[in-house]
Length: 281
Length: 318
Image (cartoon, rainbow over all chains, first blue to last red; front, side, top):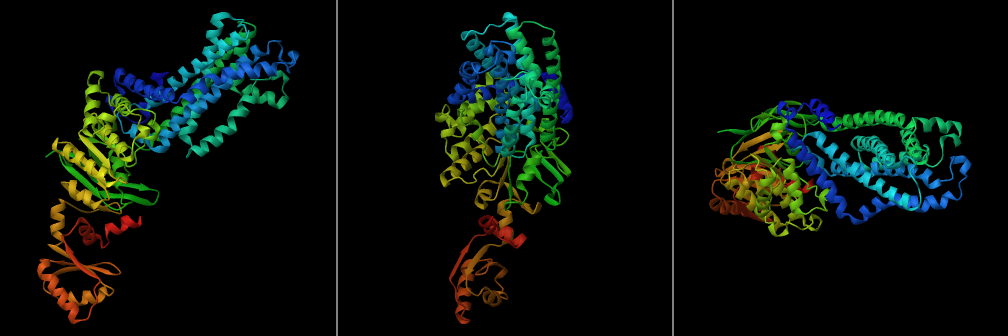
């Protein structure tokens, strides 16, 4: 993935020949340097760290166990609402994370630090890739935490430990889709105000117009159509199947659909980034 | 001499506004070269093109021997850029040392050399004892100094400083001037954009005065000032026209410029002879004077000579 971005990017911004033949070591150094920047910022922002790490687990523990009592097992197809919710919480976490994950890029752009970075001899891709990896690492930590909470409150993962890893992979792909899309939005919009207006407008409907909390079959017809077009639905369905039933043919299909979504989103993000930075060089 | 910056008819247009209009610059190795001009003269746009952040609309610019459009990455490897406003907020939770370490990684400084280079840069700008403090607690002057350290860190061939003392208190300005002079001694080539006359005068070996994106005049500050005249007699009076008419034909007057509604500058060869003569004339003709004083010409007078306006006033206005 990283190499793809690197190549596409260096052609698009007409960097000189030596940049295309840039030693991998330099690129790694850039990505690690930027990764360290993201990491230090989060680790020093204690409240942010605590809330972003624990929020999904808290959702599952409190919301899941309270609302579960009001849910008709026939509608959701299982009496294990927490197990049912698990996939929804993971998906919701991924989406909110993706949104907050794009924010540092937005600030860099807005206060002009991005310009300073762009005047440095770095590959344009190392910026996006470092943020991407960072979000990926953070998201994984959150999902693992959610799993522990789920196990603690008695959810059993039908597909076993390998299934749990598959859920992580699905969450990872999903996070690629949305992180990339929100990054694209961050580079596209003129100000942070626009970013939050659009992101706020999209995020909740995106989650509610998926099967995060309600199965698709239980939705009105028009909603089903939208839910079927929503990448969240595929990820959630596969994760839910892994948790509640075990391995089925649905899992690889969902992985395939998500991979297509992820590649498309990454393409959009790269295009937006090149568009934003390309005009300058 | 080797040209560190060479531009030919460098031009940048934003829609129908020409921000930089056919600029020719030639900056040589080891000099501090000033870009002096009022706000909106095109200084930052020029810098953004030279630092590869903005493509020229037409014309050419070579920095350290490489074309900014064709070989931006080679240019970026050789320059340090200190922006006009310090975008420190996005790094507020990092320490000064961490900021520099991360930026040195982005300049591909090897791990072995990193510590030494970071320490050295911090020492140079006097932040050694604050190295491990989070920068959110820094003052404006400290942020600027850290930014200069980050521009220097990788030992660039060219350091670009865009308004390095804008908005700083007097003490911080003097400190930064000291660092810049120190860098000159070390042979770093510096492009310094400023709208402070005293700053340009004090630091620059040569400078270009720009106005409306065009070169007004280029030269060493001393030469430019000498071209204006030896002394400037500044006369504040309610009737500048009458003063002008009174002295215009005197042989010791080389030029007269009205700078505002109540002030004229009379350029003379020798103020000690001109002052009594002017007093005599104003008594004879009953001209009232608020104040009469003389100075050596400043870069403001140079600007006035070439543009008919005062830089000082435009600064205050805008």
